[in-house]
Length: 444
Ligand SMILES: *[C@@H]1O[C@H](CO)[C@@H](O)[C@H](O)[C@H]1NC(C)=O
Ligand SMILES: *[C@@H]1O[C@H](CO)[C@@H](O)[C@H](O)[C@H]1NC(C)=O
Ligand SMILES: *[C@@H]1O[C@H](CO)[C@@H](O)[C@H](O)[C@H]1NC(C)=O
Ligand SMILES: *[C@@H]1O[C@H](CO)[C@@H](O)[C@H](O)[C@H]1NC(C)=O
Ligand SMILES: *[C@@H]1O[C@H](CO)[C@@H](O)[C@H](O)[C@H]1NC(C)=O
Image (cartoon, rainbow, N blue to C red; front, top):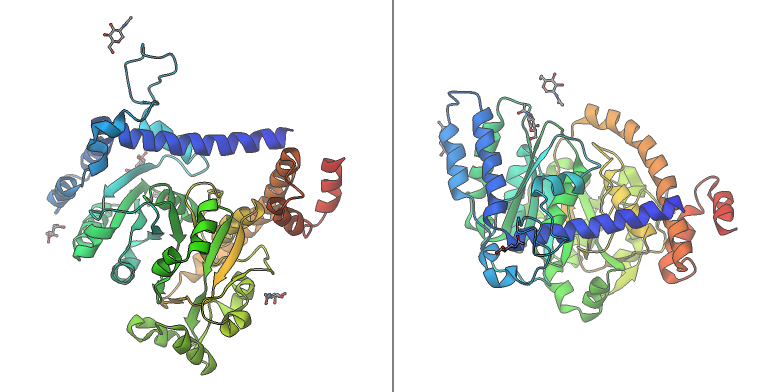
């Protein structure tokens, strides 16, 4: 009982928070923007005096793009829940809650204190809500790769950038973000930038959730920045009625299979990457390309690469051999599917945890057999990765058990355990040691 109540509460909170957020965005422009400005000026105040280029921070302030849509008074009236109002006598449930407080609750499982600045830069392009936003995170050493992604995708992108403010050169980082954003016209057209300012590195799942929360379309693709988009899956999905219907319904996610070059040096120049499946398959046959992270097979092999190679054009097939380490790159509905668990900090298990909870919630994975992405090789921070993996392995083991219990109990109480929605939780959780016995107790 406790288990299911807390689960409902969590879903409820998420919905309320998302709603509250957009209510704020739509209804208050000065009240929303002023905390952002306050935050930015606070950064200025905190800056070491005599910073050689502090004027460029004001440049960033000046170039901050005010979201157009929050200027519209007509849209404001459509919302009944004005969290920022002080007109408290209009209705007993009107409440004043600062956006900072809502953000801190929205990311309550993340490390604190942290400051989130949504829409630090806002894209100018008009966006169709049925479009697919690429959501991703970047660190300063990946800026050049990001610029390439923007040129390749030419569609909406929502990016979370972490600024570590426990370092004396964070103003330089802000400057380089500014330089990045102004480096090509397509940045300003397509890219929304959301900043996270705190001393905590590698809170990947928090950053993923931020990029998704502020995406302005109904559908998102969760992508890692190192991948080159090789085929136009965006147009293909939007033109496919069956796929679009499944996306809208919210119980399906679509996998874009991932590849990498066997010899790292071949993977450094994306201009040589294949752009159609025939060339991809022949590069695989020639031994140049292989599935992504072949040495960590479980990460991607549920995609079933042999089946992918053999699939006729246009085929979309279901992933039938899911396992808990699977971490493909997927397109899915922004609202509805579970969010990434923010307790995962650092390398190891973080993305797999997102995919695991989605799967348990009843989402089926389908592979788009004409499409693919290719990894652009780079050096990893091996020592850090090794330590954090050990740590996250333990968290993941507990997470699986806890998530299984929550969904199993919840779906049992809702009476959907023995429907297609409940299929995944039953099948996957039966693999956990001791779970069948636990399940018997729940069902009793
Ligand atoms: C300061 O920043 C601006 C804009 O980012 C840049 O054009 C300029 O070269 C920088 N100046 C110094 C001294 O770094
Ligand atoms: C309620 O608020 C309105 C302004 O929105 C004000 O005109 C009115 O006097 C207030 N009523 C009371 C009882 O405070
Ligand atoms: C970094 O940002 C957080 C969140 O705003 C703040 O609490 C903290 O004091 C900042 N740290 C430094 C060193 O500026
Ligand atoms: C902040 O920086 C100081 C000095 O480099 C370091 O000792 C401390 O651990 C850092 N804090 C965090 C949260 O990274
Ligand atoms: C993936 O790899 C694991 C471990 O080698 C294996 O047990 C599993 O059958 C493979 N799955 C697929 C779909 O190839």
